Length: 267
Image (tube, one colour):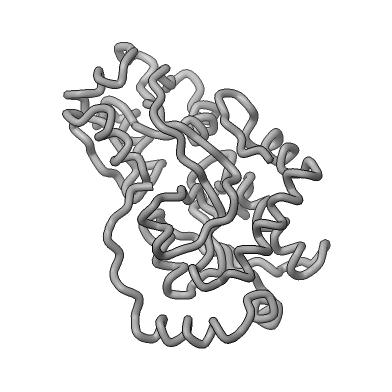
């Protein structure tokens, strides 16, 4: 995701983290009786609400439930507090102790690794452009130069786009849904998204959009925790590897995302 300067955590947050270091993660979460999970429910297949007010569903929601089952025991209910976060607030929410984990297509970047810790990736995805069904073809990444290309603000989209098409008219837009709306409304010519996200977009907007065969890079989405939460990081890693080994991860991907054009994180 695109790295931007974040405000320094407040003094209160720094004091809270100092105290938290002295208390292990899992007992503290159990004492609270809830795992606080930051999500960004705007990606069909990963985390989204089928209708307004409905509980979020998707692969990332399944990951959260499997993690919570390991902390509280399988079958426990009402043990997750899902916290909706704009993409631009994901890292800050961890730094300010507003959530315990972020599971929200949160890409590993060198800059982020200075502030937060990551588990093994649960998804890998390249960037690729979406265009309207009636748009001229985009056969090479350089053909994006001169076009109005929307990127989801706060993600890796902008950095990736500028690497392949430095003369594109990059337009930062808040949120994936707003990017799609701008594309359909012809405010932009293309949306530089990821192949993983595009699967859900194309299924939900069949006949309106198409993904072009241009690909760039490979980013890794992973569960993130605060840098000092080493116990929680290790536990989440263990649970994710268990999901891989038992086939629960593959079943969740098959249920929510599908396998077309998708690079799976496998172990």
